[in-house]
Length: 114
Image (tube, rainbow, N blue to C red; front, side, top):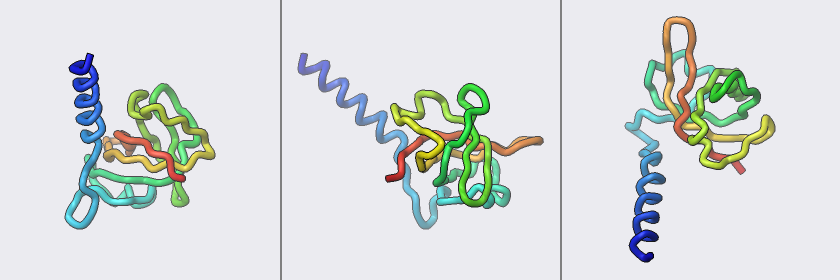
C-alpha cells in the first residue's frame, strides 16, 4: 500500500510542476491585456486577469477584462476543479492562437484571484 501512495504522490508532483514556468525579465510570458494581444504574435504566452463571462460552445468562452473581450479555449480538465461564474475574477495562462480570421487564447491554467 505504501508503494501505491508514493506513486500517486510522485505523479501529482509531476502534474503540478508541468504547469509552472518562469515569468519575469527575459521570459516570453508577461501579464497582458486583451487589447495588447493585437500587437503580439501567434504562440506568444500570455497571462490575463479578468472574467469568463459567457460559454460560446463546448470548451470555448468569452473572456473580458477592462480593455476588451476575446474568445478563449479551455479544455475541461484545465479548470482543475475550479468553479467559475461571470462574477469570479480569474487569472488565465495560455498562448495566443492567431489564424487568418480570428485570434483566440488557448488556456493552459485557470486560477482564482482572491
